[in-house]
Length: 99
Image (tube, rainbow, N blue to C red):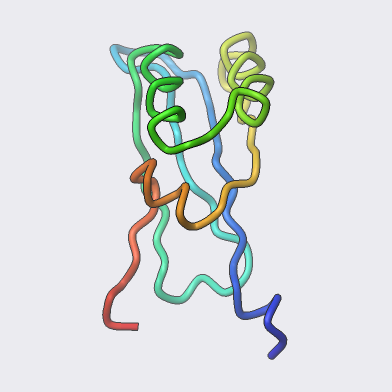
């Protein structure tokens, strides 16, 4: 197994739904997924999600277009790549400590 096969990639998915917390955020794991589990979070507003992105160290150049597109197109998922550290800071991934 090569190093690139052993290390998974992470995609942050954004989707606008309905309800009190309409913005759905989830993490997809691409590659070796053993030991990782994506978590779904919901946010009340784009502003609340922007604050989370800023706390996690993401710059607007990375999330601006996907977030704007998500808000404009209800039900369509927009995604962008994040790293493991960012996924952890956003609380969208769980790591199995027994691995």
